[in-house]
Length: 343
Ligand SMILES: Cc1ncc(COP(=O)(O)O)c(C=O)c1O
Image 1: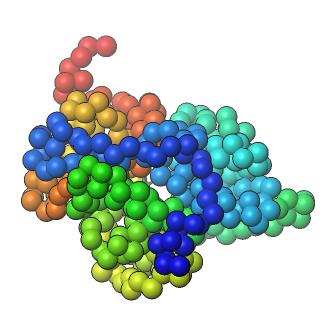
Image 2 (image 1 turned 60 degrees about the horizontal axis):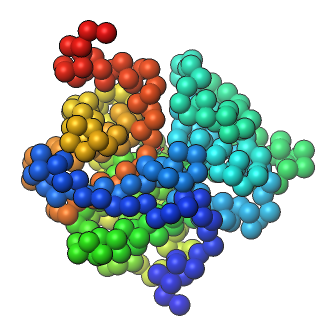
């Protein structure tokens, strides 16, 4: 069996319910002068969708095969990953404990509210590095196991060697969809932090002879001591799980922090204009934490002539962050046409 066939046969759950569409962004493309498509992983599926669901389809199939009764995940209070785990736990009838760190008190809005609504047990652990959070989470797993639970732990961002295979499959899915439209995949641009999305897309691309360029727009600072190294190890680990004989090196990890701006969830050059352009040209929403920074990157790279088309913007979800009052206020005051409206 080829590695691609092994990948196709991988045990996985169906949490998305349907194949997310890919659509051409005609008016946005005209505005920036490059052919742009959008892979709509922001819509459908369990618990407000987003990129984590693809990872969970693979990871949780494994968790169920291991007999898990309880999922433990970690992240920030506003994490899309923990929200997706909480939703998937509800959908699968599993218990869920979330370890949530934070650097400032936060109103119960957005993902924090949804985590609670999906029935997860929420534990607030204060301000903590990713490394300390992971250690703490391992302790919580032991505690739950002592009380008789069969626990499956998901690392930050649900990023792992196994979960990235969800995105290797996704690459294949996109490739086929673009072929149906008579197009190839020149470049994929996506928001990146824990790295599972990037690693999986890179592996998927490798299985097709590196035909596309995969560009990760990093939206959080120093998520690992060696970001490309961590991403590469996910991709290599994923390759091992499907017996793929592909040579993956650091050169295949194409990530940049150039669009991070002031930091995770904080303003960056062109971010509000990017959100505005996509909304007014396409009626599509992106948030200021993740996908908005990927769109800002697309606009900038297009202006510099650095994008090989057709370009696919991989919409990784999270646009409900727009309803967080902190972000809504910043957007409103940053855009003249909104700031001029007298409320
Ligand atoms: C909306 C959204 N986009 C992109 C990402 C980055 O994906 P990854 O963690 O796989 O790098 C995340 C991760 O939290 C996310 O929530």
